[in-house]
Length: 171
Image 1 (cartoon, rainbow, N blue to C red):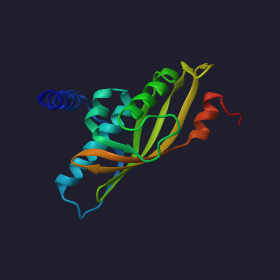
Image 2 (image 1 turned 45 degrees about the vertical axis):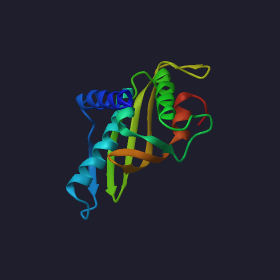
Image 3 (image 1 turned 135 degrees about the vertical axis):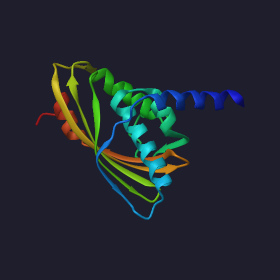
Image 4 (image 1 turned 90 degrees about the horizontal axis):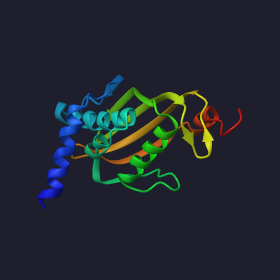
């Protein structure tokens, strides 16, 4: 039983060394304690920084062991494996992918993040080779935080804009 605890501790250590991206706007439910707000904001920032960097240690540290994606796209595995696979797919197509937290709302055990993704389609997505197209799309996530980690996520991405920018859908 020591090995899994050691692995989690190592993931937290590496994740703690990475500077976390900050929200441009932070809105907080004032009825929450500072400790709860700090814990929830840190979990969300850790997960959003994973999307900014692709650093899997951040996802492992941010997501609860029983993490559930409640808006799981077809073909994506449930749990930690889902976001890891999605990040790899996106970074294969958009190697310079970055993510900003435009705004974050903290209320109860929920954190809502409004994200903006940017980059250039220079890699490959499915059978399509990028030609350097600019990528700029938004996503909104609702995280349920438990014990300082993201336990559940509901998300929606502006997939139409992304698909237009990738050249999959004609405008």
